[in-house]
Length: 386
Ligand code: SF4
Image 1 (cartoon, rainbow, N blue to C red):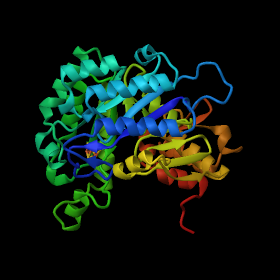
Image 2 (tube, protein in one colour):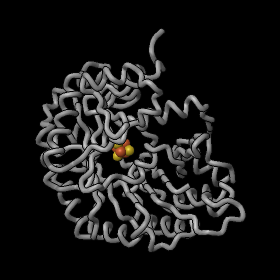
Image 3 (cartoon, rainbow, N blue to C red):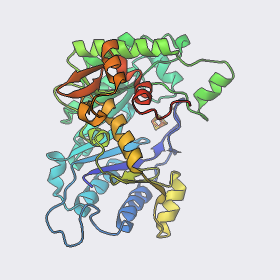
Image 4 (cartoon, protein in one colour):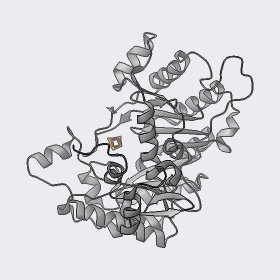
């Protein structure tokens, strides 16, 4: 396992659209959390899950991602302790976190102070993904975010002052029309900060969220497909002008600063997930942990595994998944993998501008990414109504 994800479930409040597995806490139980994660790693049966019995050469990590939740709510000492222990258990020199391993921390802008950022840098974090979401205070309030727009620029400057040059911003588009959110302005303000990377997510309405309740009582409505597509394509045009390249359906990078961690997911590589609700995948079996923090913590303190369930993917499922993941990326799929001759729908997509053939690979255009599910159905028949 060269890719490690650690889920930090704590948030100070729930955002209006969020259905993630989180634990809303005023006081973050940092010590209990770090102990539980290290106990989970210990129970996995070896001090190094990437090493086979008898193997002696160094087995390193390539990427480590602290996601959430809000990992930046963990006190800096807890992050330092966690990274120190992980370096020991994966038997990599701690200095590798500053050089060879991509180590990402998801952070909310209000948690970024010079003191915190400096401590994160010393702990080994070398990439920060900031949950910016919008530069409009009204919109941030509607989202129940705890920062205001001015904090985003401050956070980016502070991170740079602490030595971070690999900064990503998350933005959400396709918001309800009554918010009158100026998406072009938000894209420009994000671009002005020159982040290395941007992740853009279309708002989706998940059950049991405040947003779903507002919609069910008619207080607001989701963006229609037309506006979703308009905003998505606007982002492609606007960001391309600033030198960003969309290397995945929702992710754009400058100067080759792709997320190595997420790229590992999209290329079907094995990864280990620790923490409540974290998923792991070894190329054949997907496992997921108990999602509620308390249940996760109790299980581990009783010496029980954190895993709640697993599924073994059939060969057909693995092929479908790898096709789907490949078409999410700019690399696309080798034509040879689609069979000879290529299925007629592939030529049709190219004709309609939904895909391109480059170096014997079929890759989606932005218009194709908007229709990705339908394209996969065309190609495989899976999900098509009989
Ligand atoms: S900060 Fe992120 S994880 Fe926490 S409630 Fe908001 S969207 Fe969900």
